[in-house]
Image (cartoon, rainbow over all chains, first blue to last red; front, side, top):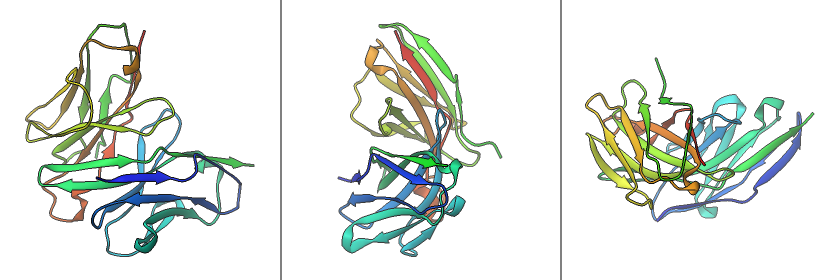
Length: 115
Length: 117
């Protein structure tokens, strides 16, 4: 079975400073990994996806994530935080079977950006 | 190109009542998944529909049921509502018939906020 652990429930950064949101996963095979963002009272927006083509994945809004198999990690980073980045971030692992695919969500990391 | 749409946006029910939530998938998608997101929690998988059949199910009781129509839209039904069913219900669509690696990418709707009193 798949599982995802987001190591920080809350992260606070100053505007213009780097962002690091940490995620570790458990998977019995090469997984598909995702980061989604959820702004208050909104649905989930796909930031980026890893599917084994490249270990460093670039997403939208300047975010990127690096897949490290040896560490079973998929941390999300951004060089410079913007006020609009304040939101809830979810790391997700996908399990695909013959009958479909199921998402396993982490518990989320709330990002606060201080002006 | 319309994304995933859900209706209604908000709903208030009382304990014991029944509710139906609706979802239209993104254009070109054939698979719909439903998730329950309690306040302050990550989404929990309820079930997934493809070709009008329930293909996978999470750890939810039989009070939660669904349906997928020939046009790929879907409904989530919850019977005998409990206070604990209050949550944001998210619908996500994907395409199992895609020929590339996008088959497992899910796109989410804005959700339906259900409050049970």
